[in-house]
Image (cartoon, rainbow, N blue to C red):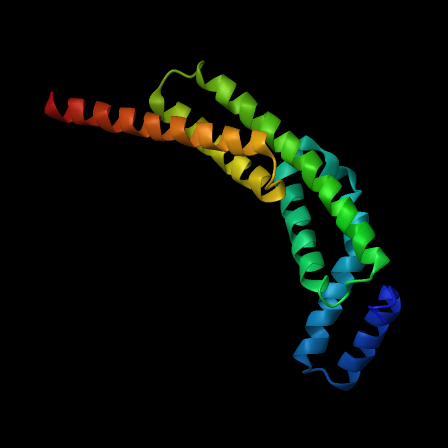
Length: 172
């Protein structure tokens, strides 16, 4: 039924199997996957996923959806529903990656206004975390990759400056 894009019917059949064989791990796993497939389109369209203040949580939802779809693609190569869902996931991933990139740029711009190294390092660390997530969402986006590399280098430079300052203080 999954192969025929009849996902609700497949879920119902797995539920029947689990009623008869409650210890069937494969049926339990597949039922979980089918439920996720049925739920992801609705989840991807919720306002929370689309708001930038929930961007990190939304990125996790999209990455999980991508993982499920990628896992099922070999078993369902001709599924039109799976292809449509993959398109929605990719669109959501691009949107979220852009939001994460913009938020990281804001953090980096804010660094010049902080009074000490530790706050700067904290902002750069947060920016790197956001960019790592953006990179997971958009592996082929050169802007994300370039920004990630740049912020990591700057974070390393700040770390070295902080270490040097600590050494000067220790010696003084």
